[in-house]
Length: 410
Ligand SMILES: Cc1cc2nc3c(=O)[nH]c(=O)nc-3n(C[C@H](O)[C@H](O)[C@H](O)COP(=O)(O)O)c2cc1C
Image (tube, rainbow, N blue to C red; front, side, top):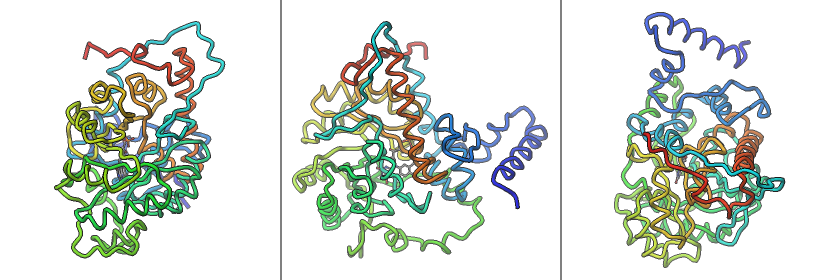
């Protein structure tokens, strides 16, 4: 029987053959990229166990090998040409680090306080729906790994495990991400349930009010020979059947997204919950200023990992204008393309309190379940601590803009 390493080897040899033929001149990864319709092309080696990984990219290759094409497509996709997805990575190269020397870095403290809870690491697990599409243990495996390592986890409305179970598996106060639907009765039920489960913070995602064009996802789905309907029913009924947050709710006539997501909804939510309210998807100083004026408690600078609009702008480049507009009045977090400890270092130096990751921990989950997520977090924490030491920074409070410089050449 062919092992997965055999399969990869065959694929590689086949691609090498093609690259040497009609596509002469293109490297294999570039050809692969063209074949997949862009997206994030696995850069890592194929590994057989989490401890073989040298960096988080190794988990991407393993996830791609293990997942059915359609599920990998859902994980990998950006929108349109995936330009914003790529921009999120490229943005980090526009900032360089200014390390300081001759500082005693024998002890480095990476803990961060967010709304009264102290976390061991400033690396947060961003909300992602449908994690059982990546591994049977889904959000529970993620919660166990995150909780054990002292990382905050944000649970998605579209989670395939309940908020109560995930809270219990994590052991700490997870945050709940809300897509508010077009029906206030449903929105209310969702936030009451999150409150009841002990979530101290509600994260309202504001960057997807009007659908999106996920071409890479569709391309991968076409390459998947299986019939989706044999595992899950299409449409809303099939979707909510695997989404416990909607258990017991009458969704007749309800749309799970609404193009009428305005500051009125923010105001209404503000008044409807005692949870802190964080807006995810803010990218400009104008909207950051409106967050302050509407009594929002925190911001996540995000473009949904390049999965919302094709702005072409990286989140790390949006971050400084948001931080400047907020002027310390609320915590600013950021996500999008974080793959290295140095990425986290740059964002925190630019004023973010914490940096969230999406795909990296999902790659770990898809590849190896809980041990995969655990190893991804371990690698990123280690890389981040190493950068703190190199730069002579002993605590996050000491990390400021003097440690980065924007590249003026590009
Ligand atoms: C498969 C997948 C599902 C996602 N689902 C959600 C979601 O349900 N709600 C949400 O606010 N963001 C969602 N996101 C966006 C992430 O929260 C986060 O913004 C993004 O993944 C960060 O970029 P990165 O993947 O490059 O780290 C999802 C991202 C991925 C990759």
